[in-house]
Image (tube, rainbow, N blue to C red; front, side, top):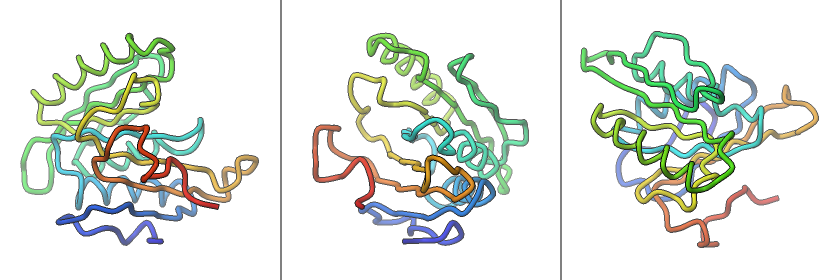
Length: 181
């Protein structure tokens, strides 16, 4: 298991990677690290986890890693937010943050996802999707990051984050949806 300050190599990485995150700061730092070292846009990152697991905090770190200075808020009610920035090399960057929590019908989630995916591709953006379980199936080529509270009754006890590279459909049990006991 890695700390939030160490991570997977950006090349030839095919297995899952796991981090124990002590607090919100570590969650944010992991997001920044992933944006700087591994997740090169355009790509889709599916963010799984219960309410309060740290998904939006991780997206705030992703934005920082992409050089996006504006405040990142949860798009639960807006459904999607678009952000632009500039990385350390002076290149323009973009982030599309999508939250499917309020969409109970898979068809509605699929339609919104398709629209935002097209926008993200046009922008060369990282597409971060909260509550991807609302989709009828996983989009091909998407990375998956699962956030889990170590103690659901005490969020201050930290989180576990597990990242998988693009994987087979959700029905494939070779890649667990939750870390083992």
